[in-house]
Amino acid sequence: MMNEVFEVREMPSGTEYAVDLRRQRCDCGEFQMDQVRRAYRARFRPLENPTTWPAYNGPRFVPNPYLRRVTKGRPRMIRFLNEMDMRMLHGPRRCRQCGVEGHSRSRCRQSAGAGPSNPAQ
Image 1 (cartoon, rainbow, N blue to C red):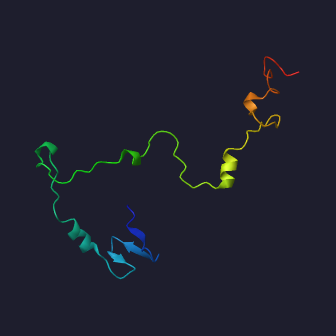
Image 2 (cartoon, helix red, strand yellow):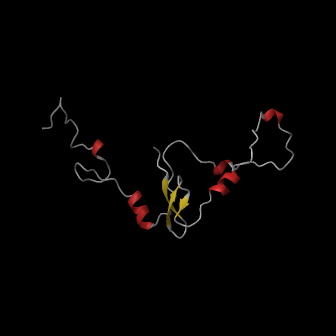
Image 3 (cartoon, helix red, strand yellow):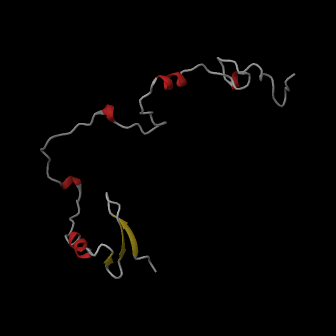
């Protein structure tokens, strides 16, 4: 059996009502099933084949290519950066292996040669 009792929240007040579809009751005191039926009573005509549509002579809209969303890759950061952010983003690189600035752990000379076939001395 399907659930026919729903909780509805009215916005922006946030007031909650219980709606019982089987009994056609709502806590608000109104049940608007007739209005919903009337809204969808009209028949909708299918659009048919676009080649049979009449010619359009209205204004032509051209999209701005610079406002087009990029679908590939990581989304661009859109927040405004302050001085602290800029310092953190462009600060010197520090190695987590030896603690020296200017290189990362993957390029560290201390770990060079260490590995299963060539253990560090």
